[in-house]
Length: 345
Image (cartoon, rainbow, N blue to C red; front, side, top):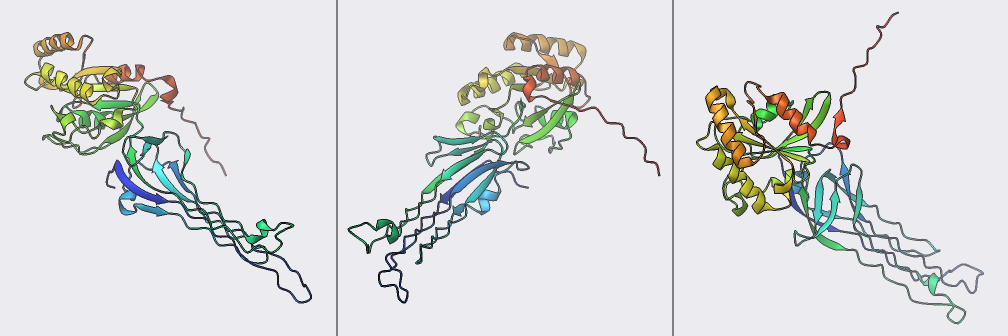
């Protein structure tokens, strides 16, 4: 399935049906009077957050969502049928923006959340509603109310508890593959990861969701490389895991590059709790590890952990440090395996 996290949709609610102008005409009834019914209401347009989706690709192939109009009123005091609503089913974590791409209409962060995007028009009154003591044969009826037409943007921000940051080839996908059942593409060239990946990571009986986004480079906030298009997917994370390649020429410069991009992006990403880890230590000897750790801690201003996604060295300690920054209400505890009694005839 292709990944799509930003798309444009056109919606329109249904117009209300017009009221009817009708008079009762039956044999032996001299003064039947008005009996025109009201029109039915137009259909509404809703958005609903559903389970099982992690992309907006469906809206690439269906961009227009138009509800039906209400049925017109009829004689014999018959009211027109109200049109059915239509529902845009979106992944949890979808932001619905106005046409200017800045005004947030709704943030679908909870499963089952529903938001009314466009209300259908009310049906018009039939001439039965205009009967008075002085106007017993009204020949007027109201037209139905027009529907609402809008252009909206849908922007998906994946719901994850922790996010991975780093330059291309820092080992983020390798780390995710080593600690979860996710199987992202891994190769020895930059920008192997072209779209975010999610994995459920477990440590000490607790599980949390980790997001791996494409690597950043210097000038990403200006659109270089893949730009900062995917940083929105870690805005909702409780903690960021910053992986620094220990085999690069200058890990300290690499660290500073990512921090500068976070600060340029904004959205309080630079202020989120971070765990910094020096990756690929399986390719370093003890002296190089100690030197780089000391130098990087001076730049970070805090502790730096050592790990290797390939050999698995230091992974449990890094996961525990990440898990400690996630609130308890977001952690899912693994349930104990229930022992089933053997079946007997």
